Amino acid sequence: KVRSSAHFGCRIVERRVNGQPDGTLFLTLGERFIRMQDAQKLDNHLGKLVRVGKDGSVPPDNPFAGRAGALPEIWSYGHRNMQGATWGPDGRLWTHEHGPQGGDEINLPEPGRNYGWPVITYGENYGGGKIGDGLTARAGMEQPLHYWVPSIAPSGMAFLTSDRYGAAWKGNLFVGSLKFRYLDRIELKNGKVAAEHKLLEDVGQRIRDVRQGPDGLLYVVTDEQDGRLIRVAPE
Image (cartoon, rainbow, N blue to C red):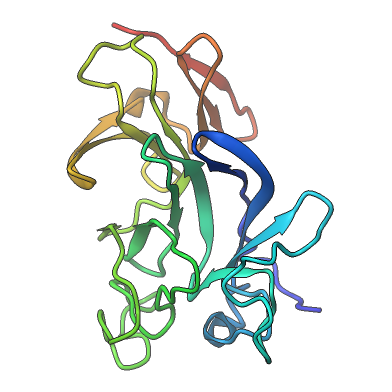
């Protein structure tokens, strides 16, 4: 049991194969802040992305199934605090996670891969100063697809697949910012971040989650005492 009030992770996404659910779930689990070193260890669930069946069973093709000293539920490790996960139109799982002071990341977690935290990071300690040896890369550890410095405190994640906002927005990735209180519209080109655009800054509230509704429109939930559900209307 870990006594901590931070870094829980909070997302559940159903895995899809060839566009269809396969009956297994991905769960994002934080390293609880006070146990960051455990993100590099395979004998616990802290700082991990795990994959399980809906009945809690372990899929036999999980990367660490049958490996001595490793929990079989683990899909990938070396994560800090994943606050967003979604299935992309490219057929891959996309996630983002909070860095420390700087270094929030977007990742595409692959089975058995190590995403580095806290050994490598583009962030620093709160108040300044390097984390560990101050490394941003090490052999055997994955680089993020994208990172933010300064941190935006990302939360929620969704791809727009509808035509409701025109061709320029279709296929864009949308991420909420808790820290700066906007919705980030992220243009992608060849699988990389090409441009970012700030939306809903005038709302002035922390963006907790974003989803595409059945009507093809985007819906945003804010994280405030007077939180709102906002429908993003096309211009």
